[in-house]
Image (cartoon, rainbow, N blue to C red; front, side, top):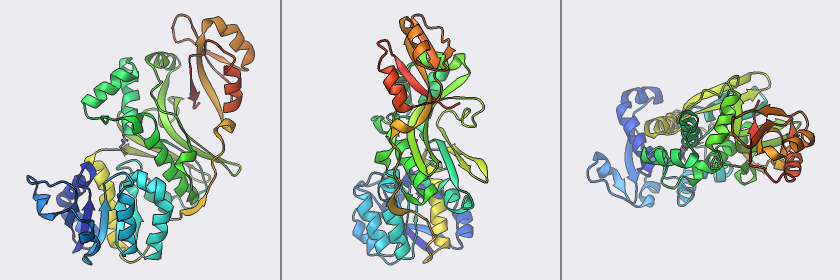
Length: 401
Ligand code: HSE
């Protein structure tokens, strides 16, 4: 039997124990041997839970136990997760994690340590929760040059935008409802400001190109400024508003951003609603391939973590190669990225908009006193320079069609 330790008995950690118990037989068959939890590390005790007999509060007990060959890290954050994971790998234990903060910040280093120790650092659950996307990028899409990744990478914001579209409510109202229903965290900043999606697109892009893409270099804009009025305009042209993590490589240059975009029904991500995530990857031979499923939640995320445990058991003392060099891949400045923009200004400046922007398409959202339009393709800096001359500028959303 393979004995594992689970660091952190929160939502995902308790889900890992549940998945291992519920599907013990099938997991044993697929892994080639039984997998059992020997330790659960947490600051807390769980007196009403059968797991209590396995709870320890000192990481060194796990580190120094030669019976533990796989450590599951579901603590979140980088402190102390980074220290624990690094020590586990250096001592020859494989690590399976759901922690995107850890992977985005230290993925390249931890992948290298795992390789040097002939163990594995696996992180399927760090992007897209239960959706298999890391393993496909590493192992299935290896014949293609990846040209583009476009993903709905955050369940909380997709839920909020879906409800805003359905109910016609403003952001604050829907966020409050989502918090009451437990879909949004009490402190929703990381989700609604796009920071969570930013780490996820940084991880996917690093894997797609085998080089370090720093999440700090990726322009990130959340959904807090999207309003019910924006959705009126979107509806008028049959568009949805979604927040995407996107990266694309054009002529050797990498562009990446996290931002809300208007998309139309011909986009395969248009119908991805509620807390679901989806990632569309475009390869130069394959074309588009899409991964869809539950991007968050206890069982779904734990399922992905346990799939990594099975992979680690099947590759005991054999490193499954992940190409992720620490050499940094620069992201082009946002100013140079080309987009089309949906724009709302005061009606008084309609004539000015028609003369200053080329090829505009009018969008009638039925809102008095406003003028809505979509620009032609232009760089961010060209757009910013022109719009700075408008006194009545209200908002702009990038257009993905
Ligand atoms: N807060 C994240 C989300 C959880 O809403 O998608 C999964 O990473």
